Image 1 (cartoon, rainbow, N blue to C red):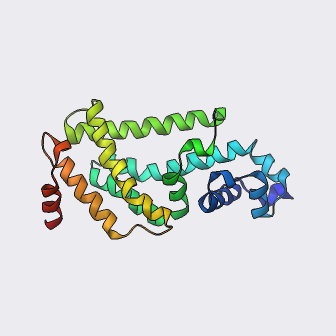
Image 2: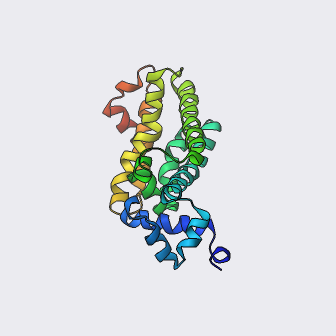
Length: 208
């Protein structure tokens, strides 16, 4: 009866809620099955281990975020890619806490289950390809410095602006988008030396 009553997504949803509330360490087989009022046999019928559940949860969360990010890059809209993070966070607060307050190593310690290795490698490659594509378009090349600038403007800045709000369990306010947009224009629109964009260029971007 347990097999018919619970789907894999039920266990992933329960794990997501537990991790968002108390961190990945709180996601145990006992805690998940208690939350669902499910027998342990039902859990192990669908997941070989807690590590497999947590790994699949982390990967599913990354892929859900990445979909809109990659689509914006492929459409040639770097600003939309940078602003995708706050928009996605507002729609997916629980998942956002998992993705932006923890690393994948908080979900699975040591060696990843073999079934997840390919998916993890593929998503990492997809993200890097997006950074390289944007770097080539925005900075005229895809060398290490250009890719680092791309990562900073598309990922590091949005994350730094959003994390304090997630830590306080609140939705990112419009100011977050303003800061991301201003930084994007200061760096990407900064000509041949985007790394030296001045505070005055940020101020002019805001006023414009």
